[in-house]
Length: 386
Image (cartoon, rainbow, N blue to C red; front, side):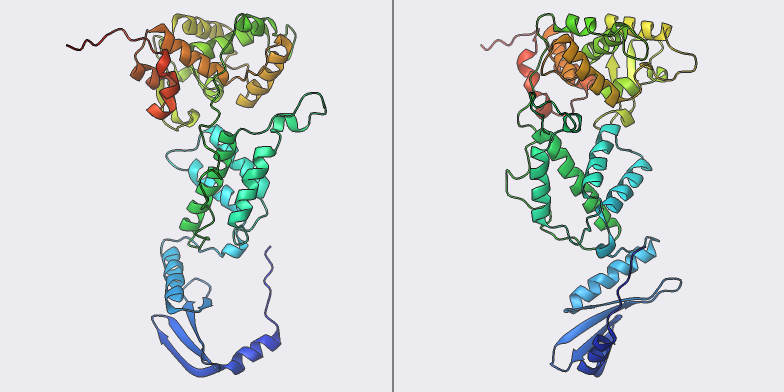
């Protein structure tokens, strides 16, 4: 419960002595002239069924603005919030609840970005958060070990830090949630809170990974599967890695996709928006090998199981286990997400689909994000200039 600090009695008496009796009120704003000649403007809001609120300002404009915001919030049934009592934890929780109930919920991978910010800045009050604090937070993230490496005690292997593009996502999660919350609950946020010089916030496309599978790495990955109970076997890895390489789907999409998303002829997979990174649904064409994997998954699927890749409980379990698989297979510097890059590259090299079809299938929404693959496209037509 938030404690309210009452002003000492001596302060109240002093205030009464220094304020002159000449008080005028216009549009709910009372002008108060003090003994030294300075003015204060007191805004009051007293509506039926609502607790009375008042606040003093140096200018009439500030007082009117505060009163109108409070009146508007009450009119739409939304309580105004005092920014002194609003914590970053509350801001993130309110925003996630809003998005979860909206027509376009956030995909699971974006939700984790907001949750990370909430955990880091939970007890910070928005009234005390400054531009310098946000900049320092970004700097700390850039030098902090990723969660998977943070607890490692092996001094011989350097701990990996968050990539600039990942830190950028955390920053924009904070920015979006704060801007939505202040607008929704009608309180002021420092206009310079998220104003930075170019280069302060990491570029989303700096250091873009180009890791592709080499030589017999795919075979070695399959062979590193463990043939024992309560673990992922070679067959499990052949299924999910093979499917990722055929479809260019992300791990959260593969793990979450259900049998009901499969077309009647098993040739298309309808990915719902709640699973995709962009929040937009898309259709993935299934190759012969992808359809064979789906058939194998159906044959081994427990009764009543809704998900196609039922053996993998969460996207995180895939990423963590894949890292261990790579270690056993002696395959370095490879993540599960790199399989998406490999799959997209293979689609471009195959010449079976044109650029727009590949972008539709992989979910690349703009040429900016797809431009790294243009040199791999095979063009079936040529242009002759007379």
